[in-house]
Amino acid sequence: MPRHQPGSSLRAARELYLEVTKDPSARPLVVASWQRSIEYKVKSGSLEAPYLDNPNLDSPLARAALPILDRLHEQLADDPVSTMITDRKGVVLSRKVSHEGLTTHLNRVQLAPGHVFAERYVGTNGIGTALASGRPVMIAGRQHYVEDLRDFHCAAVPILHPIRRTLLGAFNLTTIRQGSDGMLMAFARSVAAQIEAEIAAIASRRERALFQDYMAACSSARPGPVLALNRDVVMMNEQFRAAVTGPDHYALLDHAREIADDRRAEGTRSIALPSGRVAELRVSRCRREDSNAGAVLRVRLIGRSQPGPAVSTAPARPVLGLLGSSPQWLRAVADSEAAFVAGTRLHLLGEAGVGKRTLVEALHRAHGAGRRLEMAEAPLSDGPAVTERWLHDIRELLAVPSNVLVLRDVHMLSDQLRQRLRSLLTQLDGTATGQLVMTSQPSMVGTDDHLDRFCDATVEVPPLRHRYGDIEHLARSFLRKYRPSDESRFSPDALALLQRCPWPENVRQLESVIRGLVRRPPGRVIHVEDLPPECRVSSHKVLTTIETLERDAILRGLMTRNSNVQRTAQDLGISRATMYRKMRRYGIVPSSLT
Image 1 (cartoon, rainbow, N blue to C red):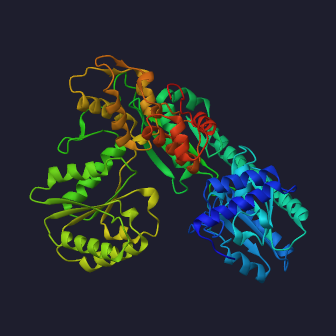
Image 2: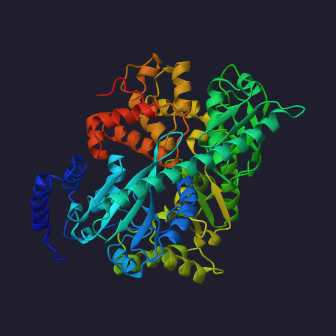
């Protein structure tokens, strides 16, 4: 296929778009897809499908679809037809091809597992257009936006969750054979229906199994409060409803959802609740039908609700001067302090904004007399000269025994630089070096991350949404910090709202919110309507990981754009109407937004 310069490529695409619009057989769906492709500035003369390593084959869609695709593979032996399944982002999860010649063609255009075929990257194509439109689509020959794809005929059908009717992904049939479009589409619809039926059957079996475990827990001699849940279902008995109310209810549900999503979570957990009580959770996994069928939690409440503040305003460790007394925070501080005092290498895990740097600085102030605190971050470039200089600086800093080196955000290091750093730390092992503290975000660290083994202690700093009892005292502390003489106080409803906010940016975001409040007149009660839009979020809905990321992206956009919905929508590449719809879906209150 010929290649064009960017300018000529766009002109050629517009000329071909005019041809497509004049073609009597062109459907509005294809024309709209070409318009989007031009708006995305996709290069029609070159194919650029991003690649994501290790696509998630453990999703409900993949588990339901792969056995069906295996059976289809046997039925379509030697036919030049490929069957594929993709996730909702257009990532190809699986591909089955029986014809060797077609495999060569598909590999040449990167139509293979791990590559992303969303319209944003490759323009009009079966997978991307079906996902973008939410409708079955047939894209044949010159209807493809990118030249390299115009030898193919693709029939793709979106796959929806049978209960929630949310988009899970797509099933795609691809061939280079002409004249079989009707058959391909009928076949693709049939297979997609089979996959949706299998997802429904798996969900039904999973939820029946969870219900059986839930009923068994409720039927025991002394059931007490019982909660059972997975991503689609929440069940609770009357004892739970009566015993856990108000902010405690939402706090406990938030913790329970994270526990249910973690397949390794089992045994006993203790959770500090906003009222001052502690919930002891006995976690049992439901493993009858599916390893991720959910969890059953037996709840025991310890202590009484406090009429005033749930916890003391005393700092977690007076010697460190850190505010907070939630059990998770206290444990993280104590474990970090023990490692720091012992001089061992420490790895601090925690979401952005939880206070990892603040914790290290407090440890150094309390126990770092005579030692120098140095901060280093990942280099901005992977160029050889830059990385060599960076590694040299790290070696020089660690060569001084009195140094404490904080290597921040190691999850940002490239694979090659991680390997070089591992080699450097291996060389320095056993020699007199400065103390090393690494920080990273837990969602960015894989199970095979060998950097972790160079640290003698790993501590996870809890996110703010798990420190309910600390939110009020942190908020009051920030209010005093930015307006020392202000006697303002929060209304009960405003405090409850602050405690229920998901805080995607953690303590950093809370401080930003309180700093914004000092513009209001001092000395009066802070009500719900005084809080910015990012706080007015209902966190009691069950969200998938992708939905959580989407919600947090909207919140960050509103924060950055001073609550301007139109500009935030433009930044996110969605319409204003879609923005408002998503805000309603995630409980982001639109009142007072511009």
